[in-house]
Image (cartoon, rainbow, N blue to C red; front, side, top):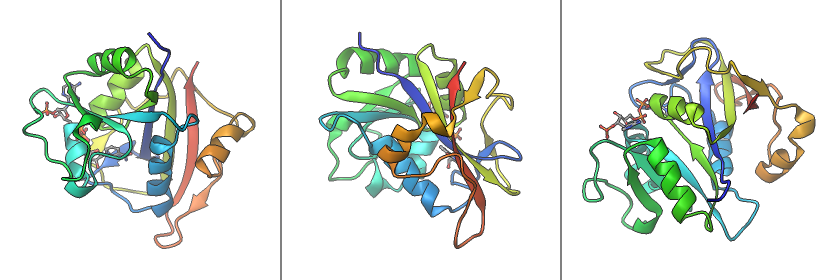
Length: 206
Ligand SMILES: NC(=O)c1ccc[n+]([C@@H]2O[C@H](COP(=O)([O-])OP(=O)(O)OC[C@H]3O[C@@H](n4cnc5c(N)ncnc54)[C@H](OP(=O)(O)O)[C@@H]3O)[C@@H](O)[C@H]2O)c1
């Protein structure tokens, strides 16, 4: 078994730990949307791809023609979806879509069958997916965008103290990531259109 790691990536309202409203994002921050795609799509080894682990609601929040997230292996965690029930882009490669009943099952399949092709695994939401990812023995890093301001949300990262047991990675230890993702981490920024402030941070399990 390879040592392919499980990470998470989320944008979260700093005030209430909210991540969604009515199955959409509560905000529009173009740099964060670009950063998300850059992180999940980029690999150090160009012959490999990353995998994303995604809950059914989050999967359905992506426009049909944009799913699966390419070129990633998309693993949908669902108790009832099947290959026949899932809707996705007609031009998609069905081999890049898997359905799994739990994160643990997904981790076993990826680590056993895809270790030669998958570099990193990212849990990309929602609530239960983040919780189960952080509880996994394979969990490594949380790529967290903190968003400042007041946002009405109906979906949250849980529990509220989810970062207990994690430490923020210093900028001095993020040079490789800043280069790879072409981004400045740990620096307060502001969206030029909405004026919303945000910061990209990375947390690691202690
Ligand atoms: N801000 C961010 O970074 C971010 C990221 C992702 C999502 N979001 C937002 O979060 C909201 C969606 O999140 P959500 O928490 O409502 O839904 P979700 O986790 O995307 O989907 C929940 C569904 O996925 C399936 N599922 C999830 N975990 C499972 C498990 N462990 N075992 C079996 N099935 C499981 C179940 O559906 P079945 O009925 O198929 O079993 C469950 O009802 C949206 O508003 C979205 O925009 C925000």
